[in-house]
Picture 1 (cartoon, one colour):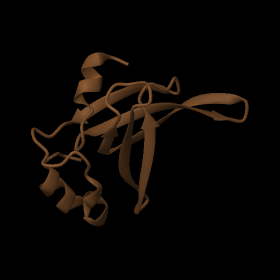
Picture 2 (spheres, helix red, strand yellow):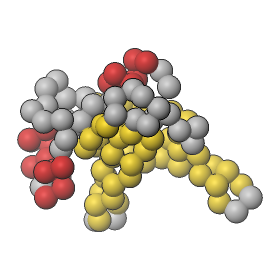
Picture 3 (cartoon, rainbow, N blue to C red):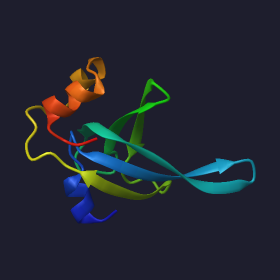
Length: 107
């Protein structure tokens, strides 16, 4: 993973993750777009990030290991200038509009 992208993955950032998925005998690329709630363990081998999105009216969270060979690329769509907390778990209880206002990013 590119060092510049690793630095930009912060809580509150809206990212699009391209992930390799095996279905039967075939492999395809799946996209998941959402807000980063948490980033854990810095840049070490076990580093991960939690991404939350609303799919069909239901909140979905996925935890991605940053150094996984399953992740093709991560695209940063927007990043907030300043976030007051390192873990944004309180966003789970807010509506999409309220979350945007609190965090200050466009999702």
